Image (cartoon, rainbow, N blue to C red; front, top):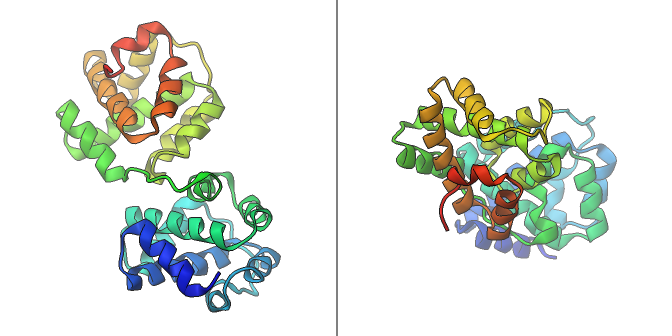
Length: 256
């Protein structure tokens, strides 16, 4: 693949202009060079256009930062906010997935921590637009009658408790379809032990405790979060999630 073709893919996936797309590519590759091993960077360069060398080539040992720091660095270098950096970075990885062999892309992904899954997964399954965190939280705020900070607390409390209730594999599926800014509560829920049998009353009580509100308020806020989950992730993914919850949870789920 030629460099201008790679840029065109990023431009099409992001809906941005050519200059923004090129800054996204350069910022992502530069940051990737700081995270990958030297050997993996060189392996990638053998299959990427030669124009990528100034950005991806490295003689340094890899740093150990996670996906949030990765996006912060991309945002700073590209001159965008973190949400835009997430969209742009996923588009760059998608373009890279078209430019290199599946084996090489898999090797690169394996060289990154598990929390990069949301950025690299689309290259293997087709590009999927992920709703921005701000849009998700604004939807919760509107439906629950909350301000932005209240919507964030409600969302994080509901997602952390949901991650305690469902199986770890299902949490990983959610991580792959939600913005990076919402991954932390899901991971906390898994860390506390997921797959628990939680009656609805206990589920709501835990949300209320984490959010610092009454169970009645927590129930209404959880409904708003589940509505945004239905609107933000793939239909079959949401149906599978809803189908794994007990019947008594139906009072929290949005109506068809």
